[in-house]
Amino acid sequence: MLEKLGGIPICSGDISWLLTPKNFRTELLSRIANAQASILITALYLEDDECGREIMQALVDAKQSNPQLKIEVLVDFHRARRGLIGQKGDSGNYFMYKKVMENTAHPFDILGVPVKSKELMGVLHLKGFIVDDTVIYSGASLNNIYLHHDEKYRFDRYHVVESAQLAHSMRQMVQKYLIEDKACSSLTQSKELEKLPTKADVRRFKKRLSTAKYQFEGVKTGPRITPFVGLGRKKNALNKAVVAMVAESKESLFICTPYFNPPFVLVRALAKHLRKGKQIDIVVGDKTSNDFYIPPEDKFSTIGGLPYLYEQMLRKFVRKHQWAIDKGLLRIHLWKHDRNSFHLKGISADGNRHLLTGSNLNPRAWALDIENGLLLHDVDGIWQSDFEKEQNYILEHSQCLKHYSQIDSLDSYPKVVKKLLNRIRRLKADFLLRRIL
Image (cartoon, rainbow, N blue to C red; front, side, top):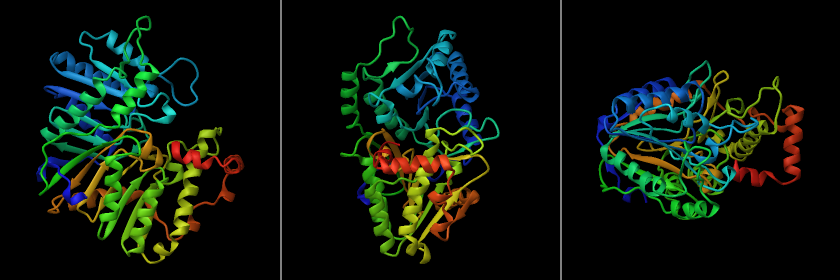
């Protein structure tokens, strides 16, 4: 499948690596300030905090200095209209959007995208910051922790692709399938005149969105990059590409995922890969590096059980494949760096195919959220050393496990966590939770 895929041709100097969230922040602000024709941002959220407001101000300043500049920002509709988890009352980032647009002479579009009628059942998880002919691709959203404003950061991957054709293709897809749809509404409307999408609008939008794809004139030889977009289980090109990368890998895989909860079809493909004597490196965040982790000294809430649930899934997987670890075929790397969190995603196969994606490679990404990804075909090994450097950088703060017993068992958890997980198991709710979280 993968060898037959067409892609957009790229050259050796067209890709660069930013590696750190601070570099990502600097690059994004610089690109916005120097934009000539257009800026398109798609992200899960643009937060009302210091870094979120910094990005907003940079967009306002760019529009002020160049009124002809086309700026469009798309975020998840439901996420923008609620506060942080646990926050009470009428709140949400859209209040900040309204205030900024009311006080600028050159307002621009900030749209909310309702992938499903409820946030729990699916969100906008498209990634890409497109400035003129450049695509900055990262799984990061825009707030203090993703952009390393204070001491803590959320680690992600950050790549810059210089390609007018790729930028055009990604921009065209967003324009056709999202911006032009009536379900996508402005998040800066006044309360009195506010017009929101109906449930029927969202249903029609979801159906239309499931057929979305990137259009481009591709080549089937040489270094190239193939963009994918996917929503739902049926005919999801991104999911098919992930499975194909595992199935068609000849020697090794390098996989990053923040929440260890792979879909069954992916687990089966990985097991088959190992049984054939091929290697797999999986980098996953330690439970304390999960963004939902609550330290024992803080007040516990139900959402804090998620990191422990993911850890038990990982322990079960490692225990089942301990034989592969013993043979040196499977290496599990637990990432942990102080109180920082881990948000990396993606797959590299045989050092010559690399999927950059915002997908968490879990059942939710597989079926509920709209996701995208860029598959780089490095047929000549042009970027092999660069990806190896990135992988070494990722592994800098990781521990390679030798045995499944190195992963905490349920009995070692705090009493409140143990009680919660036992209750989930007793109610047989873990199957449902794995599909939606």
